[in-house]
Length: 292
Image (cartoon, rainbow, N blue to C red; front, side):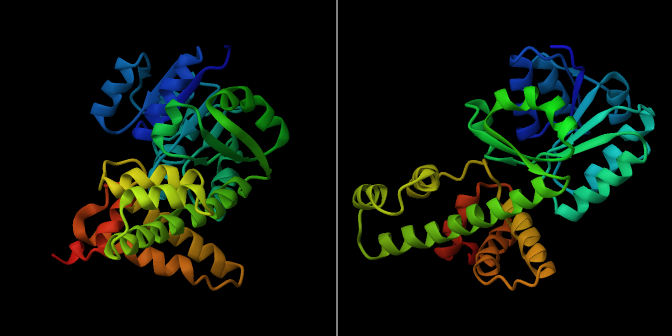
């Protein structure tokens, strides 16, 4: 399809996105510091490369989805990052969930090297990548967005240009504030129902037909009822994202109340050794299982 593209970060989400991009006919280069992830990428038809620098040398557009700020900095402005390719006109699409100020600062640094950046975080877990029901919230210049839009739109059920760089990150923080907190609230709801003698069948029928009805309930209900904690959206990611929301709110003079209370439950799940498990495992914190 013309554009030479590369994916930095081949974790569950990055690999899933890369696979769908290749399904759309794009040739894709990739880099991850985990050799096993590189092998999985190659097995799906991608071309693994030795560093983000080498990847940028071969690409017109690079994407990254990484967990921590230091990982992003290492792969963008670090000694083997994309800036070292010296490739003016490169577009970098940063898909990681980060604070808006971080994304704005990164975009400024990259622009100093002749690289345009979009911040394009994703709402939806890696399993939703496969059925293309994720959404993109994209901040950046109009013309840069229009260049990347044909790549993103087929991957999602919505791709929204939110404004300048940083606005995508802001929209993601606001989205996650709801998703993360409601997950904890639903865990409370299920536990209370169970402890008071309501059957799962009764809760499923009544909650699914009333005001609780919606995508969140349909997603989380089977995980809670079946105690299915296989990783999708990890406990540690929920705790991280809620911390970002709390800090962003403070910057704007808002003292959140619900989010910090919910976050404490995910932090307890982290402390119990469940950081990599699905966020639904917060249910067992309410059951007291994190305390042995």
